[in-house]
Image (cartoon, rainbow, N blue to C red; front, side):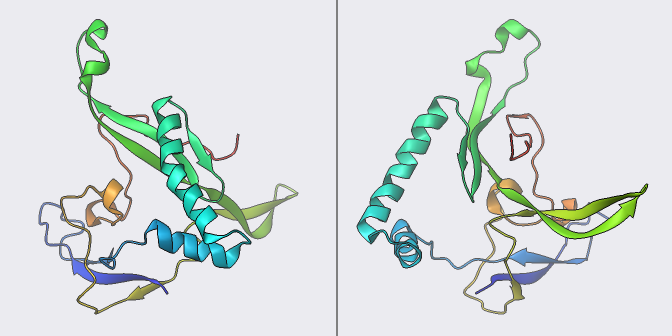
Length: 190
């Protein structure tokens, strides 16, 4: 299987640099992979029973909620880090900056990355490694153009950071910005 994409033309004339250029846009099957299917897949990869895996996955959401409510960051090996992020109204007086100024909250996800050595070079008489950081969950993803009309892009009202799509205006970078607190990047290793 592969991640499917369609070609879309940027028709936003307010961005002259990318106006009328074509971009690859991810499309998704309308069906979600549910807990049962994940449990079935894990069962084929491990010696656990499907019922045990499903019970653990069902409890994972409650456990994550518990620790996020306590202000903790959660690191799931091979997956990444989850933490709470939020937006806040700006106020002139620090005394007025209270929890009541928080306007929205969300779960921030930072995928686990690993360093992959791509070669080496000599620099100032020393051998140094050339490497790339690959997102563990995505490093083996294959991309394929599709003409299947049953696959659809995410709705346009989703923000790039939640919709998973690339936007021509930022060159495919789906990073956030604005007045979000708690949304910075951190190294995976401590």
